[in-house]
Length: 218
Ligand code: C5P
Image (cartoon, rainbow, N blue to C red; front, top):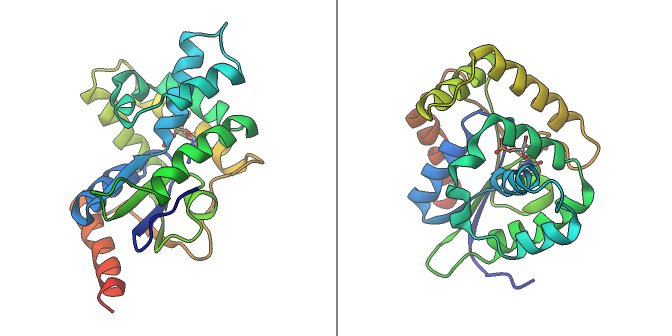
């Protein structure tokens, strides 16, 4: 794989709805990095499975990933709880993970020239996708806070779902993402733990910016 030299690489792992996406977006904007929400790639495959259950096989997935563009991530259908749950199911499949791997690493190590680097968030970014990232963060928040945040997001999107359903779904996803055999969600020793439970979006961004700037200006 072609790798661009002297780029800034930020790797973020987190459980669902911990605020990693919001943080990654603001960091990417600030440092002019390409932002890849890697969960969207799993959600994209999951949506294809739900919409084409009969056609769904490795050849079909391979073709879909080959043609996958970042703008496909804007599809609102990817945001539903059903798609998120299915994404977590298919994410246990080694062959599917392997197909998504090169899509992610290519953006991480070879971002388009107009960017200074890359910022990826997901479950296995700090140890599998960008093991040599310049900055590694594990973003978390307590379960209730994450469920409230996700519930509010769903309400904004006019999705009909109750708070208890969201809570149950996040719990189930945590269990699966943390305990699966292949590429489980974990905090690596070299990742910095950031708990966003009591932090506003702005406070979280400023906290991380301070950490990054300190190292960059050294
Ligand atoms: O982050 P998001 O909730 O969109 O991710 C959906 C699912 O995709 C996660 O629950 C997880 O199982 C899977 N995923 C993963 N590895 C990643 C990103 C997401 O296994 N790097």
